[in-house]
Each structure stands twice: as C-alpha cells, then as structure tokens.
Image 1 (tube, rainbow, N blue to C red):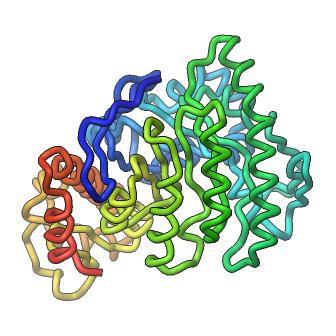
Image 2 (tube, one colour; image 1 turned 120 degrees about the vertical axis):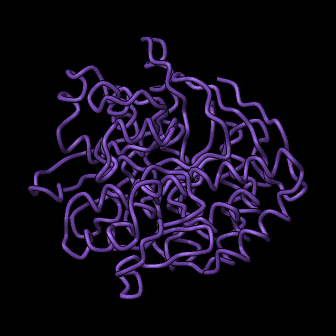
Length: 371
C-alpha cells in the first residue's frame, strides 16, 4: 500500500491518493455505507454512476445475515453485490457493544445474542479478522470497546487498554491471512473517549502497530461538536503523517469540512441516505424538506446547480409527491441526490486544498449552507 499526500493546507487539511487492492482512491473521500452489502434504496449501477470508489460494509451484520459462508461462496463481497470498489468492513464492535442488554464483554472477547433471533455468538479479536477475510473486504478493522458517553476517565482507560490489547492480538492474524494470499489493508480502530491524554496514548500505541491506516472511533456519540473537533485535532496531531486517517461515522456536509480541517482523509456516515428517506434535501444553498407545502407546485430541480440525473429530470413538486405517497422510487431518487451532493462536496474540498484556498472555500460553504 502507498498513501501519497499531494497537497497540504496550513490548517492540517490534506489531499492525497490511497493505493488500494481495487485501484487508487483520491482523498479526502466520503464513503457511502453499505451496511448489509447494500446502500439503502440504491443498486450497484447507482453506485457506479455516483463514482463511489470507497465504501463501508459491516461484518457484524453480514456475519449474522446472510452469513459469512454464503458471502464467501458467492465469490466474496464484491461479487455478491456486484460492485468492485474498495470496501472497508467495520468490525462490528460498536454494534455488539451497544447492545448492553444482550452481551457480555471480557478480556478475551464478546459474547452476545443476535438482535435478529436471540441466538448466542462469540467474537474475539482473532475471529473478527478471519470473518472479514472470509467476506473478502479490502480494509479490515479491529474489535474494539467503544465506551459510552458520558463516562468517567477510569472507565474509558479500561476500555482503551482492552482495545489496544485486542489490536495487538489482531496483528498476527492479519499477517497469517496475508501470507495465505489476502491483500487487504489493515485499519485498526483507535479509541480513548474524549480524554486527550487517553487519545494521545492510543495514538502512540497505534503508531507502533503494523497498520496501513488508522480508523478513529468514539466520536459523534453525543458530545457537542466543539469538543469533537478539539479532541480530534489533538488526536490527529500525534498520528503518523504517512498513514490515511479514517474518521468513523461522520457526517453532515459541514462535518466533512471540519473533519478535513483536523487532518482527516476518509469519512463514512448513513446520514445522507437516512435523512433522504424523510425528505431532507442537501442543496448548494442549504437544507430543506421537499415535502413542505411550499414545494407542492415548485417545478424546479432539487438543486438547480446540481449535475445529478435526478435534478436533470425531476422537480421538487414531483419528488415531494412521491414521498408523501410513500412511492418506493422516492427513496432511491432522493438518496441518490444526497450522495451525489456529498461526493461533490468532497471534490470541492479536495480542489480547494490543491489550489491553496481551503480556508476561504470552507468559509464560503458555511455561509451558504447554514446549520
């Protein structure tokens, strides 16, 4: 793997290229979420049209349904869903550990009951890597313990110690899978809650790990945004420059600019498709809900400045009508537009970094796209 930084802004924002088993991925990049080998409401042709070259899937959900053996028999994740992009798989630690009533955690791993049928399962740092290898994903994360928010520092410290031990146990299995032919990149998860001292210790441990990149977890769990960016920026300052930084679970269009300003290269979130299903539209001049009454006879595109096929063909009046009637096509069309907007936003961010005008471009975006 190679990660090349092509340009850097004084703020810490950077533009680069990540070489992956599926080809180069330009950064900053926003990765749509295909939790269960599907981005909700879209198909693989939609993803290709969007130019989605990096994505996130979830090994916990795929492990439970349809099962690792089924995906492997299909030829792996990419053939199963007919999309040849770079796929990182979340280890499932966040999903398992958030099921507080259905799991037990110890130093060896996690025992949990399926949220689908109540069946009993066991995950360890080693088995999580083997699950991801069997799925055939291109980027592997580690089993981690994400502490709740808020929590006391001793609790967060214990969770971090366990997460770091689990990383150390995962690395030899990654080496074994690579020796057997796997070419996937290793993106261990960094924790530490919102305590700068713990984040620094986590970063220093990560710097000594045999990793290709770092997955930064534990943010956007209920804290205010000012705290997020302050702690994130400090965390990133301790990380190696030559590794891509993946901020998990972020975010909104404004979040993309703020995360990149902290030195982040990769992001993912269900936000664009989730809000699309309730009618919330992202547009150059800000957000709005297409089902509002004022759009019932508005025969203009969702965003007149947008180049996506939805804006080229359909009107606010029509799309609002579809959603109010719960027509299934509405979910596809609105989700596609929002993901197109996110892709256009990261393209704008990347261009501004390479042209040396990131700060000014960020201020311009925030002025026209209010909270």
